[in-house]
Length: 143
Image (cartoon, rainbow, N blue to C red):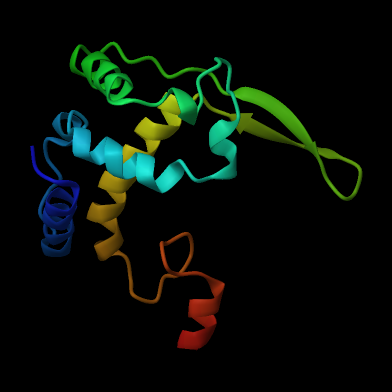
């Protein structure tokens, strides 16, 4: 197994050179990616919020990661529906908010890490929307 930084660095280089992205599903079996994803999302305020199951960040363990990887290997992983709740807006209306299960959040973050590493280097350096370390303030500084 490659470490996260090694693998993501290889993906960035492949993206920079315009080489195809291959064997991505196999990389979902890499435990290091899950640990990195866990490190990125466990601090979020929503990590303790329950989805349709009682699973939260507190139930996280290496066994849980191995269970997710095992289900992915057998192609039996099932995404759970998100619990829908409504949050009041200032104008009195309510907006919907989906609360996914913790294991779905973790797997989605692993997929985001992989795709972001490959595609981010292909975007224009003038693109600032929805990119890590970039936003409206960096766009204004560039102007």
